[in-house]
Amino acid sequence: MAKRLLKAGIIVSAMTLISRLLGLARDIFIAYIMGAGAAADVFFFANKIPNFLRRLFAEGAFAQAFIPVLTEVHEKGDEAQLKDFVSKVSGTLGVIVFFTAIVGVLGSSVLAAMFGLGWFIDYVNNEPDGEKFALASLMLKITFPYIFFISLTGFAGAILNTLNKFAVAAFTPVLLNICIIASAYFLADSFSDPAFALAWGVFIGGVVQLLFQLPFLFRAGLLVKPSWGWRDPNVIKVRTLMIPALFGVSVSQINLLLDTVIASFLMTNAISWLYYSDRLLEFPLGLFGIAIATVILPTLSRNHVQSDKHAFSANIDWAVRLIGFMGIPAAAALFVLAMPLMLVIFQRGEFTIEDSHMASLSLMAYSTGLFSFMLVKVFAPAFFSRQDTKTPVKYGIITMAANMLFNLILAVPFSYVGLAMATALSGTLNAVLLYRKLSQQGVYTISKQTWLFFLKVVLASVVMIASIQWFMMNFNWIEQGFTQRARFIAKVIGLGLMVYVAAGLLFGVRLQDFISAVKPAKTPLN
Image 1: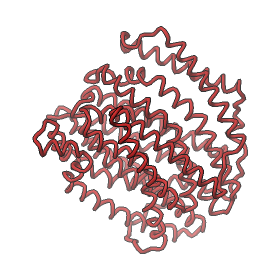
Image 2 (image 1 turned 180 degrees about the vertical axis):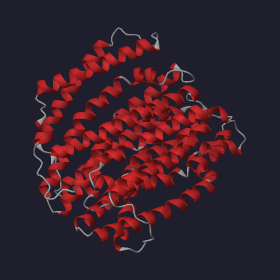
Image 3 (image 1 turned 60 degrees about the vertical axis):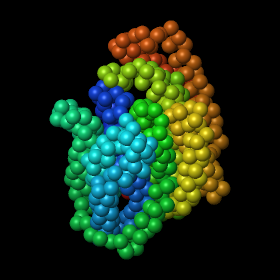
Image 4 (image 1 turned 90 degrees about the horizontal axis):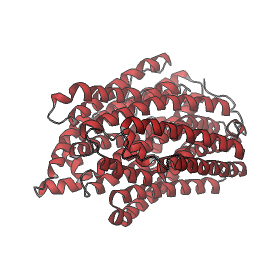
């Protein structure tokens, strides 16, 4: 089982790597043509709201509620019932997100006022930043329909993941990045503000992603005619699980959205600096954390349906070890290399050295919560797979309240960096609360072997960071050009990776740590 999970995790990570690299290319292009100015602030704002809803309807709460129920129906072996369930969920979800998209388009000004309150106040008072509110209202009309297409894309991807066809759903986001880059390149000159070309790229990307997955759903025999099924028992189960899961799985996204509200009161560029730093944080989070969470949820759901408690606990422990091996050194490296990464990846065109410095500060703050964000991606499915969504929502509410408190405490002395610090702190709180409850329920407790493994990883990470700091000691990042910076950071990353692996081996980290202690499931899906 562990080998199969590791193989699936590698496939998802590989596909995610392609997507993230293209995502970085997209962000580099955006930084080049818009920098971190007012236009960039508006686009990131207009893209963040539908992206937030995407996490709820597509990748987040819906998937966490849908996959356990789909697994349960699939395990019964009744193909007609399975198709009927897929038909009713697709029809019900489709209608809901269709009208959500319409409401979002018609009410774009209200949304812009709610989440860009600072801009709205400036608009009412005829202040300069009031123009941002007007632009955001218009741009939301273009980006908001994305929620309809990506929700159905997420629905199709959840089915394919449950059938262990992980590569398709993991590759799909690549198409969005291609569409945004192509739109920016070919359409930027057609608009007075290039941000509108990016907005249309988001819209087109949503359509393309949905069309891409339909043939794979057809091959799986589950491309069925949608039907309304609000009162179907299994649909009721999904929506009952989904409502509290909206908070439980999406706390970090809700916190980032609340940060946007506060950032709209801060200096111009604050939203952009937070965006660019969050994008670099999302790289390892998506590559490792979300990839592992994607493959672990269907497996835990099967373990629960089969009442295999030992395999359930062992599979979580496997995921936690893998998250620790990748997440701890990634967080340390992001903290130390924040400024060099910003300079190499984004500093060109309209994106200045000052922008790199300011964005690197928030990246350092975000990086302190990276490992916690990854743990939440593993601990939350441990509840959702058992169809327990009430516990994560309770802790989600506590975490959101804590995040707002941290924001109020930290935003005054540290401005936008305080918002990033608050997000990291609240993410850590969420991970601690979820783990404590799993332990209290007797579902999962970190094994002694895993604690020892963490110690080895931390020691290896310390050696890695020390070697990186020593290697960079005499290199002046500011005075060097792009080519010199790029070559040097490639050497730094390569050195850091080699030192980390060597130190890990020296301290006793072995491949066996990732492929042992997992009891096979009785009848895995094929």
